[in-house]
Length: 126
Image (cartoon, rainbow, N blue to C red):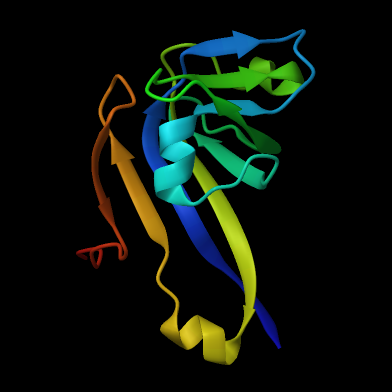
């Protein structure tokens, strides 16, 4: 059986641009792509914390160190500058791989500068 697990996420990134008439995709600061392990053209799921919108697109490389998070094409109707988003990539693996796998979790500040990384999410308190 193949399982779909969280591969990587960039948590609470601030949208810097929304380009409705761009071809599509989400431009992400290249440094954040490298740290997270999200590849250019990889499918990403984006969750807008501000309005609850959830959508799927693909990542494109933004300028390293720029802090850019640009939601492009039709998705620009779902997220705008200043919105906080969670960007996730998923991977498929068998149960043996899944038993050993740990996701890469990337945390940023309001300017999308890396603050820290982790490989597990703390247990949620009741």
